[in-house]
Length: 130
Image (cartoon, rainbow, N blue to C red):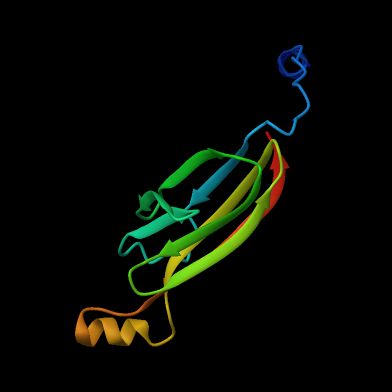
């Protein structure tokens, strides 16, 4: 089939091998506010090792090259803080997805008061190398 051969010829293009990571190869941190349970309300502040690296609204992502080794990631929606510690290996992609979500009683509270407590849910995505 001609369509299959065309796809096959595109997919077999030569690739350039990448160098294996060394101790000096940076890791990459990706923090995304993209979980479907997010209520899309309020900003979330993202701090890495005590430094603010982003203020994320729903649907936004921040990517940063980081030194290999131990790190602390703090997420804050001005009501709730989540602190995560992780070790980044040379060349590793460390990825977290999170959501600002409502608790069980938040929606009735929101309807009556116009505001409600929001909680942070964080998921670490499986590790991969760059």
